[in-house]
Length: 406
Image (cartoon, rainbow, N blue to C red; front, side, top):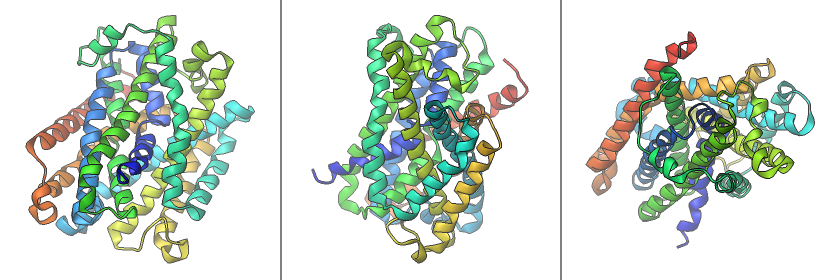
């Protein structure tokens, strides 16, 4: 029972992957453009990420390695270099989007344009990492992130056709705007299946000193944590379908439209709830993604790492997340549109996903690392199948969206 109380690792991981600028904006765009038709993408993404996160926790608990450690040890640094470089680059785009999410929320609260908030948000994230502990991240972000349950409340209060919502859990072809439909599906899957989630979870398991006794609890922690994120992501899509699509708003062209998600249900309190939800979820995600940069570099090059150690004991680790925050703030401070940046980064995540997932699947089937806890055929098939779908959708639809195809 005590181990199950560590569900905060699962929830904070889901907040970093589901309940942030990426998932909110992609789900909102999908609901506005296609009603509830893309609920299936949220469902598929949630199922697959639950498998991936459970596998990540099981790998760390059984082998005593993080995923990056394992790939380096099993394949060597040359093989690790490809997924490392692409994951770092895409994660930096995601980090910019999350800094943009907090900055937008602060613009809503103060009226000061978002670009002026980029540097203060990056500094606040850095101070949290520099002075905080991993436990503070787990418990703090998890507790504050519960505010995002307001989307679930809004979904029920708007009284959608739940039979239609349930039917939309099965994939279907679009009636119009096929390229945009499949691009949005790829973006939703990319937002759900970001390598950030399972790489962070793997490192978190080592931070929390998991061992083989956590294998059983890990299943519940991963399932409950990812389900929490998936339910709220689906709720955002349903709310967008009811509050935007139903009122003739079929495209979110500007982030200033996003608070409309909750205003129909909660009035002006909805504006405050949306701003608070976006700020808290995006800040938690920004801290998580920046911390992941430290994990990626430190674990790849064999440096000391650990959020609970003072920065002077882990200089390379601390420098990596510091540089990531500096780089991540630049596009937002320069005036990049956070909404467009977010949608693009989510689709690129889907394209990048196989580079990290394929070697990870090999590790999960390696008796040397996993022994009797190796993957079964169901886990392998589910992860490879949905990862392949996300990759194909991203590769096919990303060029069409860049050149303006529909």
